[in-house]
Image (cartoon, rainbow, N blue to C red):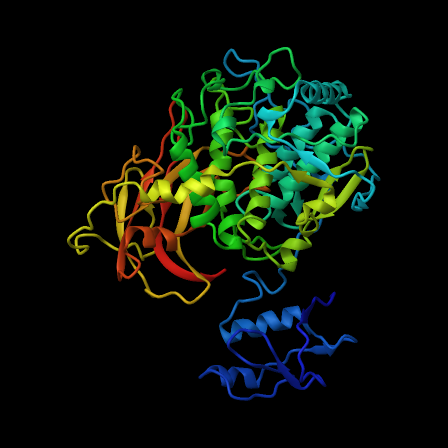
Length: 593
């Protein structure tokens, strides 16, 4: 069996393999098997522990990962991984074993022009014997600037329209064709690939941001190649600024290749994006949209897991969960753009079909920009975890070559030779002040009448529910974020589900705005296609949803309270079937940034 080694930081006293290892776990581990002072009962377990260590030439130590993980479970720690002892990065999928989604529509729905992928499902045109090459950074490319879609000039629009038209004219079995590019998203987002016994799913986890960055990078490079212009860069749909909150006009002109008939007809310009009622014909409230974005970019997303989502490890017991970047506005923009004439608001309104709409790629260009802003302007750090950074994806490049990439290699977009046009960030400058300007409800005189949600019994969220939640620590340590955990959230994989979270406001309902000072965040999911029984053993998905609440408590003036009230408000959307939601418990934890 291959040895999985972990490199530990260089330690000034590391002169042999009989030494203490700095694990930052508030425990000390001796290799091999000697014991010094440690915490309580753990000392007895340490005495019999054996961990194989090796010195490297650079003075660092390597330890056998499986032995260390087994030993850490004896110690009661899990700082290195939350998975099984064999958990590791996902290798690239075997494209020859792509699984066809069994229930995706293959005929037009209603009277619309909608149809899914009638031949071959989501699977790529993989040829037997085809091998992937490792990605190489494009050092010879010029630096390209992605601009706001509503601000580009007529010359750019003509060039972009020409590129997409050329992509749509390619043979259907060409991996660069528009149909095949759409299938990329369908396959990776619906479990069409299996690695070992695990279905690959790039939503609801830490894979979300890096997968989509790579995806639109290759889409962009194919378009550039088709018009022989290496300076071409995708425009981003600037929905986080009032000037860009309508569908960019270039996508609404029926004569263009950028047009898609499967969009909501009442969401054409000048209707503004409405995150509060994504399927209604009502134009959105700008301040409420800014407040929603602020919550999911800043106050609720102060750590890598809160922003990106929870870990998924190959052959591991996973804790995948929806990150704030994915939950909102991302999911709600998808929903807002889709067609009410189709069962799941296809095309852009459902994950399996979203890649069939050119608007999708500009939407995700802005999602990618949000990640870039979270790293740069907001100075947050990404995961530094081998199991994520060395996870592999496969894409076809502009030369029809199958390319293998690693998730961590896309962290620095300058190496991919693109950048973003600088734009004002009104949600950042105004978001918190808009919420603080709202009326704070009086504190309930007593919390005794409210129950706690601390058991493991499923609770049906069919109407607003309020629970009392104890705060274990009123004074979190420096650099820590207070996190609200809603555990055991279970939803139907195939439908839309959503609820909103409010603090100390039991009167909250579906009409309470995002710019309420009591608003803490939103949970949203979009439907996926149903896979074969082999790849999807359950019609439901379960996760723990987390949101940072430190800033919300401070703004409400309750940061020193022993208990808070948490109200969950389920959301329904006009003309869209809403899947039931259950959950088990609500708790608070403290997490370091």
